[in-house]
Amino acid sequence: MPRETEVCPSCGHPCSLPPTATAADLHDISPKSFGTAVALCGVFGILGIHHFYLGNILHGIADFLLCVVALACFASHEPSFVLIGMFLLLVDISHTVWVMIRLFTGNTRDGHGKLVVYPGQI
Image 1 (tube, rainbow, N blue to C red):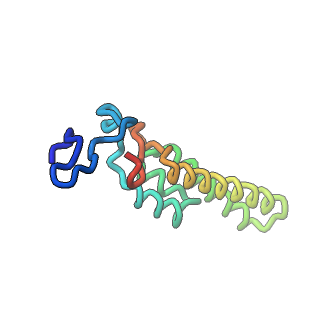
Image 2: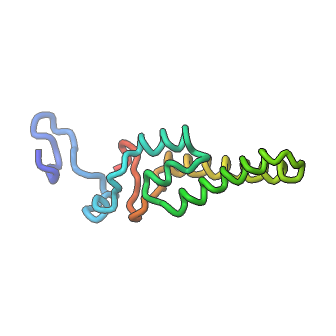
Image 3: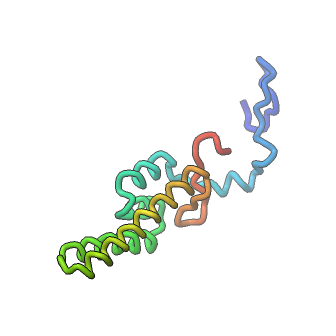
């Protein structure tokens, strides 16, 4: 059926785009996979791999460096550095949870400013 068809000719079910979605909105959708972004965020979140996948390179580098510096602080065995490492790791984990929430709510954009949509969002 053509996209502009408002009702199914067989069953009469409405099949047009929801009133909130316009043609301009469809050009604002990222080609990046929601499932891949969620999986990368869940498994490699503190390393920032999901940011590299989405094209947010600087954000990914910052996330990766945050994790590396935290691990370097732990490796020093100096009590004050270990405390700093714990703080950095807590910040990194909190940021990963925040990004995951934004992914699940459909508010994440890729490196080109396009929305990463979850299945059924549009």
